[in-house]
Image 1: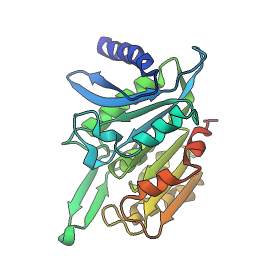
Image 2: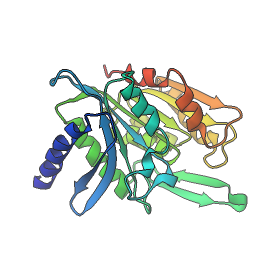
Image 3: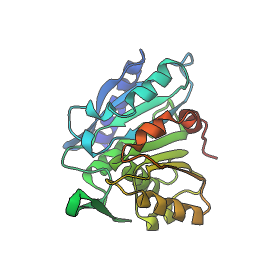
Length: 259
């Protein structure tokens, strides 16, 4: 309890440093482990104003401990939106350790370097996911965070982590946007049907086949969930470029509220 409180207070004191509209470095600390993250927050004119919170999960290529690589894809997009006052909020980019994975999956490499994944529903969280859950729970309780406007998204491994978080914290998120990810369709039964979800994938993706997203979308539609699905016919694994270029994406995310 004492360690959790110390971590909670550290985050509270760190967040005001983000004024100035630039990425700040911080760490979520739990027992003998830590999770690096970058964050930026819009400068509010009202100290009592509650802000939406967006968490973005990077892919496997950005894993590490430098607390920088995770900003490669999407960092400029959200920072620029804040700097131009297109949105108000708090943006957080955590970084997964090199040897770990956001989601609990088995990654299989086949002949020709093609990949397949086995997703384990209702399983023990990876160490990185456990740290991420602790960070999310701490951030969501900050006095300047609007609990009705918390958003989660990510690409590739981060898209898989996004789907898993929708199962592990179904009541937390107003919106989610998994990009070129996947998950276990059986876990959809745990999702909150009120969460707005926009799924993206490239039709020519050989790293994470588009069928993984399609299976999740099909199951969510069976559960009458609010899901949009974009398949880009000529795009490979880098569907995040197309997703980030969607003119409505940022506006769509930040207009979502939990009922």
